[in-house]
Length: 196
Ligand SMILES: CC(C)(COP(=O)(O)OP(=O)(O)OC[C@H]1O[C@@H](n2cnc3c(N)ncnc32)[C@H](O)[C@@H]1OP(=O)(O)O)[C@@H](O)C(=O)NCCC(=O)NCCS
Picture 1: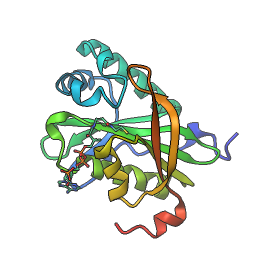
Picture 2: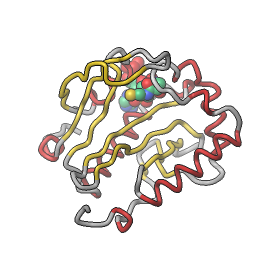
Picture 3: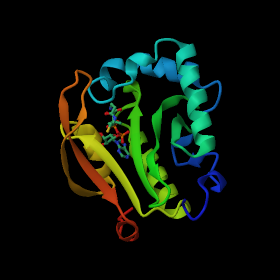
């Protein structure tokens, strides 16, 4: 049992950056999520397995309601990313594979295809990393990326995450073929010495 029961850990209702707002999913977010996934199916498919499961606004709405419940239970902390000035839905991110004993968190992310190339995900990952170290007392924050996913690897590299190594044949791609994963991480020591 962790020192503090995760159910009692306070979490912010939103992380506000210069250009993005990152917040837990709410009932009613489903249609925006569905619209973003529909424009992004080919962009997401090589790297993440879930695109096709969003086959209607209702199916996406069921996902956001389940994610909201998991947030409340502190089982997983999935969030949406929104443009701060326009309110437009940009993509998803979150803290996953949480080990509340070790205080270890995995950051995941995707951006809708029409909003790539603006640095929104880099900003969102900066906000999540800050949440982990400044509020959640993290000992480890990590990002796992399929080695061929250069655009994704650029994000932890840009933020000074340490390359820890490659886990060979550690996930299956959508066709079931094993893929190598590169692991990037920060510890509190790295966080103190960050350059941003
Ligand atoms: C991985 C993914 C999120 C990267 O998206 P992205 O748009 O490249 O990431 P960012 O939002 O951080 O934007 C960075 C880009 O914006 C540019 N940029 C512009 N303004 C910027 C700013 N203020 N700060 C940082 N970057 C900025 C950067 O130069 C970079 O562009 P470049 O790649 O041409 O050099 C996206 O390709 C994606 O969703 N892929 C499919 C799902 C996926 O692979 N998820 C990750 C699984 S591990």
